[in-house]
Each structure stands twice: as C-alpha cells, then as structure tokens.
Image (cartoon, rainbow, N blue to C red; front, side, top):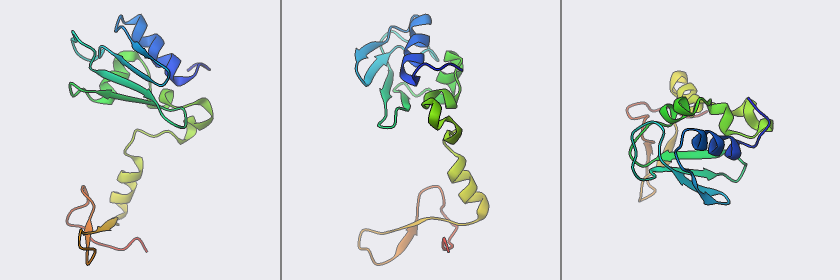
Length: 126
C-alpha cells in the first residue's frame, strides 16, 4: 500500500478517522473505529519484528478494525515480511485440514492431550 512503516500507517489512519491515538514509542491507545467509543478501547503496539498488534478491549474483531481503517492484514507487517503475512489462521487451518494435531503434556507430564481447538483428533505429527 505504502512504504511507510506499519505503525505510522495505522496511527495516520486512526488520526484521519478522529480516533485520537495517544501514546509514545511502541505502545498506543485510541478510540476503536469499529464501534462508537467514548474512551480509548483499542490498544496498538509494535511487535519485536516491526509488526503492528491491534486489540479492541470492547471485543471488536481485528478484521472489523482493519476494515474501518481500510487496511489489510499485510499492512500490519513491515514491507520485507509482508509476503509471510496471513490472516492469522493459515497454519492452524492447514494443520486441521491435514488431519494432524499438535499435543502437549498434561500437568503431571504422564500423558499427552490435544491442544485447544483440536479436541477429538489424535495423530502424530510424524
């Protein structure tokens, strides 16, 4: 979309929509553009690799927030890593479609149980 860094792009869009972004450095907050907001409920942060992290504490889906900002998932990543960006479900969806599950040890460490979201399916990652 543009060569600007992702955080600046998101903050600029929030400013254009009068969402009043406030903060400094890598942590910001603003009114969520996906719902009527009196107080800032949207947290905006820059991850270690330069990606933008968005969280509406009122419960709006990130896709809704991106839609209101007229941005895509790829816009949240630095230009050099945009080809790696997914909608956040790609790896899980591919794993589920393959019929394989990931497992983890229980508290006692004696048996393995499926991770949440993969209940009822057991197979090795072989």
